[in-house]
Length: 260
Image (tube, rainbow, N blue to C red):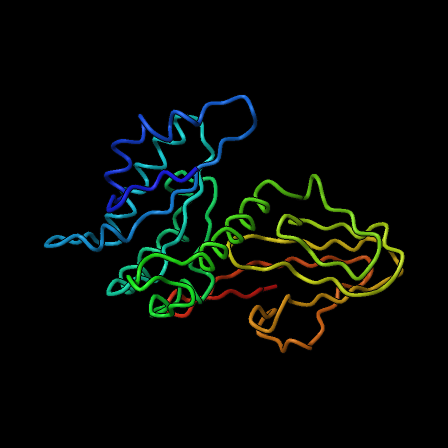
């Protein structure tokens, strides 16, 4: 459900939330997830624009209301917006660094896709409407994929419940936080998932069997591992493991990469 209000800022939504989204947080049908995708309206206030630090404080209030109501809360980074990219960059950096401190369960790094989050991206009418603020349908589809990546990672496979891969090649999904190759029957290639959306996520590839080495490759040439060339192999030998972290690029340019 989309609970957006035209022109509303974090502080406005936090004040009204007990009578809106918070009423949906308590249910018996599984986890109720709220994604808070707000921020740049405060920077656009005429006469008294807010600072990124103050916007984060208002975001913390919104998170607190929804958590107390029973939701699992994810906060989103903001997109490029005409005239506001400098404020966007400062706010997004704070969100990525402090989402846990303000009580959120996770983050959806919407700005990780450079077509939406890089400075000046608002001017690209393939992805944005001519208002320089709101994405078109193609941009909204990207946002949906990023939210899916982040939520699938959060609720997906982990060390206690790894994804079991017995045959290669295998394309990792965003929810494959931990992959076990204990039953592997052949050597081959493991392809990493798309890294946009779940910035900061940690993925582990565990290869405890004694016979086959595994080659790990990024999804594409824009999401490299440790800056290595796209064709440069990263190997997980038998009886070894590899841990990779999803690292966002600076918000001025957008994008993400992997670090070992």
